[in-house]
Amino acid sequence: MAIACDLTIDFATSGNSLGFLGGGWARSEDNFTWAIGHESHLVLPRIQSSSAYILTLDVIPYVHLPRLQNQRLIVSINNIVIGSASLSRPTRLGYRLPTGVALGTDKLAVTLQHPDAARPCDLSDSADDRPLAFALSKAKLSRVTDTTAPAHGLLPAGLMLGPSQNTAFNADSPASLTDWATARTGLTVPQIAIQFESIGENCEFGLFQRRCDAEPLGLLRFSSTFMRNLIRGIETGFAGLGEIEDIDPRLEGTPRREFMIHENKFELVYHTFVYEGERSIWMMREQESARLKFLRRKFLEDLESSDKIFVYKLGSGVSDEEILPLHMALNLRGSATLLWVVQAEASRPAGTVEVLMRGLLKGYIDRFAPEDDAHDFSFAGWLQVCANACALVRLERAAAQAGEPIDALPVADDPVPLRTPRTGTL
Image (cartoon, rainbow, N blue to C red; front, top):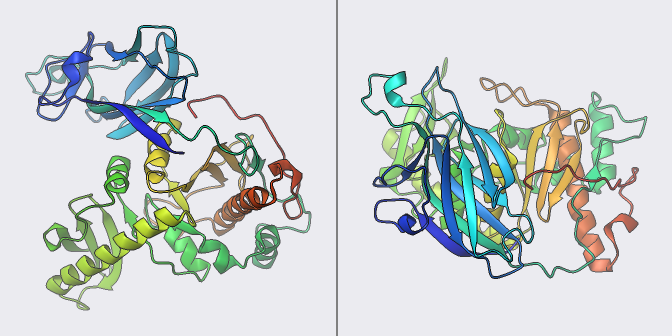
């Protein structure tokens, strides 16, 4: 998905937000402006084009544990609700504007409803009596520019590939599972695993690849960071990553203490699998500096080549509105495919992979590993999702090469059902 940014609003004191603010805002601060009360308004210029548009918001919700754990946000454009979310962490949100929503009007009225605004003085010993909801740092209005894609060779939104209907398949049988995955994709299990690159939010998928006897080099394979930092890193090409002064090795864990790296520029935290007594802290800094710089170059090459399928999962859940900005960032340098993995639902059983939009797949898994034991993951769940994602991407490439509609091509032992996608932000 190729995009062009038509408008950036900076909510810092030195920014340009004053010309766009309606009611419901506090005075701007060094890096952001608080949305206060139960409703805030932005007034944007009229859209001159009939192109598809995406509005993104960089937000920090006001929370105070344990009494105020999240903030709800409902976003409307010209009185049409385009999305809602409940947020407990800093993030970036993305909303697709309904086609033609602003054509024929002289302005674009953005309404932010935040019913959970609260006064810090009611929750703590703070003297601040403002009803705070969200701190906004930036808003962007971007235009989708690749609207003339070829008719053939694209996965249509709503296409889903589900678990095998072959009665001989048994997800609890390793031999049956690997045979099915190979039949589905034409690839061995290690070859399937190597098609993917993890971008968060922990080491679970990297450990799944290791179980597949695949050890691909990946910048974020065993890392975690906030979604907002991840997007910032991708957008900037992780500029400056690997400087020695930003690398803080710490011995953590029991009974055998491992060097964990805490990187300060993008707040990456990751395993080294190097243990106490095996390296000095000085050696760890030197080693990780060189390693991060090399992996940064490789990550950018993978983005530009468009060969990898990038995988993102968050055990505590992530919304459609948060995934869209990540997908946009990945596509700044090429036509990247993102596989977003979530817990299975009644209508989307484990192993299902669904097409949300061009270059964005949603996989459904039976369970994620517990937070305190990333090794306890669902091998069968991950392999089924990966095999189906591989099959869909290979199907798209085959259809593009043959000039045939997607639904005219078979996939292994199962038909490819076309279903109507659910309504939502994406």
